[in-house]
Structures are given as C-alpha cells and as structure tokens.
Amino acid sequence: MPVRKQAKIGVFGIGLAAYWPQFEGLKERLEGYQRDVEGKLRTMGAEIVSAGLVDSAPGAVEAGDLFARENVDLIICYVGTYATSSQVLPAVQRRRAPVLILNLQPVPALDYLETDTAEWLANCCACCVPEISNAFARARIQFNVVSGVLHEIEGHAGRYYQRAWSEIADWVSAASVMRDLSYSRVGFLGHTYPGMLDMYSDFTMVHGQLGVHVEVLEMDDLHQRVQSATDVEIEAKIAEIRSTFNIVGRGRDKISQDVTPDALRWTARVAVGLDRLVGDFDLN
Image (spheres, one colour):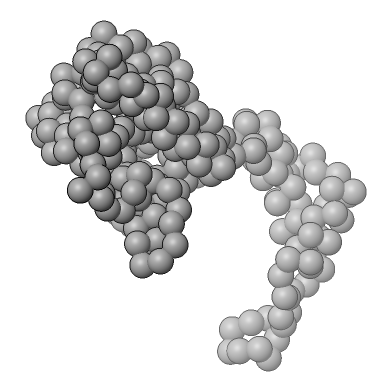
C-alpha cells in the first residue's frame, strides 16, 4: 500500500493595511500569532502553504492563485484582526477547497480598563467573522468556523483551547483522507449478485464526488496471476493467514467445518493473485 499522503493546507492571516502605520508593532504581533498557528498545524502532520498576512484585495488574489497553484486540500483563514470581506473572498475563490475560519482569541478576556485601540485590534478576531461568513455563504463557499483560544492556558478557560485545537486536528485529518482519496485507484472486479440494488456503484459519481479513479478489471486478469503464483509465495501466504486468523474447525458451531489443506492452499493461491493484481494495476 502506498504511504498516506500529507494534507496540503493553505493558510493565510488577515488584517487591514490601513492599521499598520497607525499602530506600531501590530502587524508584527499578528504575524507572530499566525506563525504559532502554522507551527501547530505542522505538528499535526500537515504540509503548510502559507500566503502570509493578507491585508489588501490584490494580496488576496495572489493568495488565491498560490492556493490554486499548490492544489491545497483545505484553506485556513486565521482572523488576526478586522479585515473587510472583499479582501478575504478572493483568497478562497480560486481553489474552491473547503475553508476553515479560525476565530481564536489570543487571551480569554481583555482587561478593558487597560485596553487601548491597538490592544483591542490585536484581540478583535471575532468582530469580522460574521461579515466574512456572510460573504462566503452568499458566494457559495463551503466553510466552517472554529472558535476558541489561540494559546494554551491553565484553569477553567483552558477547555476552550483544547476544544478548538481538537476540532482543527479533526479537519487536518479529514483533509488527509480526502487527499488520499483524490489520488487513489480502486479496482472493480466482477459484479454483485443480481437484484441487490444497494450494492450497485455509479463510477461517474465516484470519480466526480471523490476524485477516485476506478479501474475496471477482468476476471482473466486475476486468473492469469492466480495460475502463475509460485510455491514460495503460496507458502508465505499460508503462514500469513495462520498468523492473522484463528482457524477453527468442526464442532465450534452448527456450521463450521474443518479447513482442509487443499482449501487453505487454494485460498492462499488466490490471495497471492490478488496481491499481484493490486501491484500490477497500482491499486490502493
């Protein structure tokens, strides 16, 4: 079996270019938060394609082109501070991959008596999430929102960190599965018992919905490989069968019968043929 493919995740942060000259250090602070997000995603086994901090509509177009060019499986929008939806939408329109909006607060609560505008902007992740969500919904972009805390903290509020990052990890895992599927080749051999409508497959829908390639095989393809199985291969397969299964015999129940040497050998020969079929047709 081929090694499972890493999810390729496009990440971009958002902010407003007009803020940077007004509030010294704000951009650098948000970029640091985004690096933390990307670092955590890498620990989950994802390959990160970063578009950096997007703060203008032209920058969003460039990000969208990057994600399309890299064929990412999931796009993550880290909401660092307020940004207009017009400078966010282009970043997710080119690739049309599922989108995850991260509404992750740097701290669980602000000290309002000591909070000025710059500090508020560094913590106002939630303020534009409804605007972005509305724009995505109207543009028919598939998206979800994860809310919680950016950094791990102790105490009661720590659950908001654990819950958010556990949900993000699930999305990364799902993206890996989808990437595996979209590059997979599945063999279809024989046909189902006539009339079992629940088992019939529409190959066009499999191709269209999952990106999976369906290779239609002939029974002769298997027959040739079964006939050419060697004694060494068959004995190795018998050993594998015995190490994998508990082989029970007559008396276990009203149906079970003894597994004869001939039956076990034929089973192993067919299994060897199936292994060769998988290898020769590069099946997953």
